[in-house]
Image (cartoon, rainbow, N blue to C red):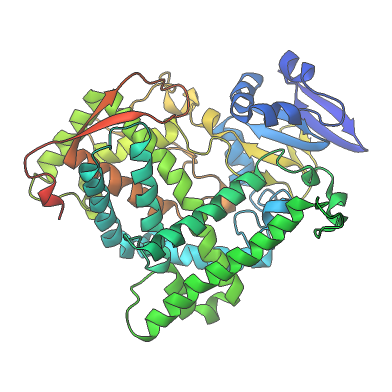
Amino acid sequence: MFIRILKFANTHLAFALTGTWLTTHCYPIIGSAFEIFKDKQSFIEKCRAYGEVVYVNLAGQPAIIFNTQRVAADLLDRRAATFSARPRAIVAHELLTNGLFMILEGHTNRWRRMRRAVNEGFRPTAAVRYHAMETEEAARLALSLARDVDASAPGACARHYARYAASLALAIIYDRPVRDTVEDEAMATTIQDLITRLENDSAPGAHFVEFFPAMLAIPARNITPIYPLAKWKRDALEGHARFTQFLDGLVEDVKRRMVIGEARQCLVRLFIEENQRFGLSDVETSWTAGTMYAASVETEVATLEWITLVLATHPEVQHRAQAELDAVIGHSRPPRVNDRVHLSYITAVVREVMRWKPATPIGVPHMSEEDEWYEGMFIPKGTICMANAAACNMDPQLYGADATDFNPDRYLDEKGQLKPSPPDTKDEGHITYGFGRRICAGRHVANDALFAATSTILWAFNLSTIGKFDLDSCPKPFSCKFTPRFSDAISNLG
């Protein structure tokens, strides 16, 4: 690998020479965009072979991928003032959410107000107020697995995890956990529709308008009798109106319950009580709350699937974690989130799964707001910057020669206690939550939720595989048997 300077449209960009594979798959006009659209996961994994910094051309848009924690932290953490913007997302952000989806919002004053409000509600000391909800929902999850006669069917546990994640997110954000009512089911379905729309509309290559912004001028209404000229635009605008009305209704419901004294502490209640300090408008309050829901559910479900698969295929890890639970908790009650301080091995298991199989291997891209130089490389303003979490989390310089192996002991000292995490991981032990000012605002609550579900499932069940699994690929629908560990396990869940 060596550094070269190329000239693109009167702008100099230094990049790491990427070798035969990228150069032979770099096409006129679209550059390497086709390769990413065809198989994003494979593309990102292959980038690891080309050095710490890799340049790609995405249909004329310069982009760089960071493959080590050293480089990613140097730029995205220590130079966060320059690298905290977001690339433009026309359909998902500007049309579907009218610029109100905080994760895709640029480094603007509105983003700062939204982020400040969320940080206040989800900081570590504030996250404690949700521990009882997390413990309660984890017990409900275990009970639902025990009562489901088809729990071992392929994909069954994923459905239970989706319900757990959705119910917990709704409880923490709106004090509205999902129960078995038609109204609650409809509410969860509508929010899932929003998540799906955001995922689809923001996917690379989903809409040509992202590469040809002039297409925004195409009318959204039907000009021809049958075919709308810009169905993507019409659908996004109609979706925004529908989802805004829905999210506004959730906030109004919290306000109503606050008046009659029936609303517990939740994120929206904090937004309402501290509105003068946060300065959020009504629609900003609705979409900030909705953003935090949308950002949490899918990644939490994917991580719980990996945890289940790892525990079922590593019986020695499962048995050691259960021995820790028996020594600390016993069989009379399930674990609580507050017990985590005494359950170091289970904490290490969750951290290792998040390092080993990150739910978001590339995360949400950053973008440079100013020209910047780094180790002889010139990064122009407007360059998309992506941290390759899958590669960064496998860095042997930080995690040892066995970095590609699953090994929870890497987080423990000789006494079995958690040891300090590697530098630049914010005491998480991995960089899956992101970097700088764009690091996941809900990570403390997410850690609590993952611990609650993992520890409760381990306390209540023995996990065993049904069939064969490929741990080197993303978890497809798989079969796992949940067998109660002792006679009173299910009744003691409460």
